[in-house]
Image (cartoon, rainbow, N blue to C red; front, side):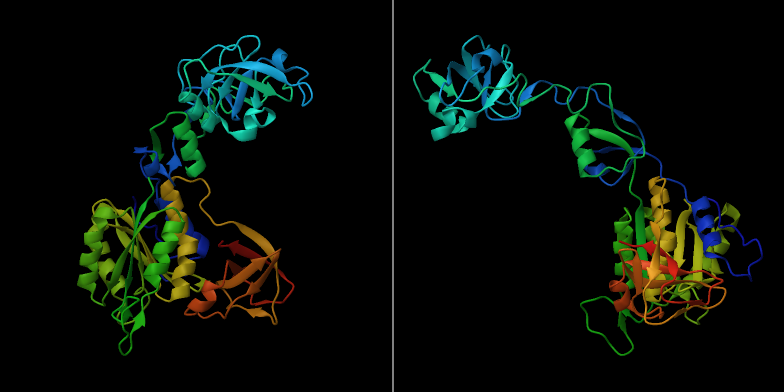
Length: 441
């Protein structure tokens, strides 16, 4: 991984949102493919076309519990004039040795069992006298206890067309077909298909391992008592959950106190399990911005190897202070986000989520966007020269602001499912105006 690109206009200039994102996506590369067991590959991106080795289903089989018969033997069958057929035996699912169905004969068959030779169609058990007192499974048990050769007859009350209630060989997929394309994200249905065609392993890009840590001596884990001047650590929980939602395997690290050496040591300890590191807090210009201090030192150590973390100011609100670069011997990507809850979450959605999706090898890495009509009691205001992202609730082509513009308003964030985008050159947006919306749901 190369180091973060310098700003074309110099370090004192504000970066645009697009410039910062472009730098991230130009630097982050998809993870190398590996072979995984099916369940371990869930959520991963396939890197090969998968061809069907054997047709599915591999043989003609019954879709009903009933009787396998010849079409001619049930032609014209009715309630008044049923067809009486000799029952020659049972065909169960998984049965290898199949009996033969000849003229005037029927074979009891279970759902999924192969269609026996000679049979042309399946009559559901409900169309026969076998459906009055017992189902085929109960009947099979009873006949197993009966004297040898006591199979009897069945009365069929309806005729059946050829191949009725028969699942044809290859009706799902045929041998040689392409089951899944490279680039497919493997969810439960795709895992099911791979298993059904006999694939025990598959070649994929693994889900990226993301380590999330927050900084601040004031942070206390939820569930503990708060002391004077302390607050609960919500950022690390929010961003870990967001990373998992994006498709990553995410690890939350407990909040690190405001000490640069402790933070630097913690980050170095976590590198062994990280494909991407995310920190939150300590990236602005405060006296205790230890992330900036610690990672700037790491950047100095890494410069000769092409690594390091650069801290920037972006023309956006919330989320003006940002950091991006690489750290450690493997140049693991690191994104340093601001500490205010809304700032960190908006920054995650705009920058970290696309980085995670890029590591996965996905072609589409961004949240979907749409246009919506702004519904509000008054005009929205936005600082000139900043791209503002306001929380909103989207429904039926309209979006309503949720909460104020403050970057600390966690409650408002919890009720939002969209971000309202106000461009850099717009300072006021009147109700009824069409705006761009980032859909978070």
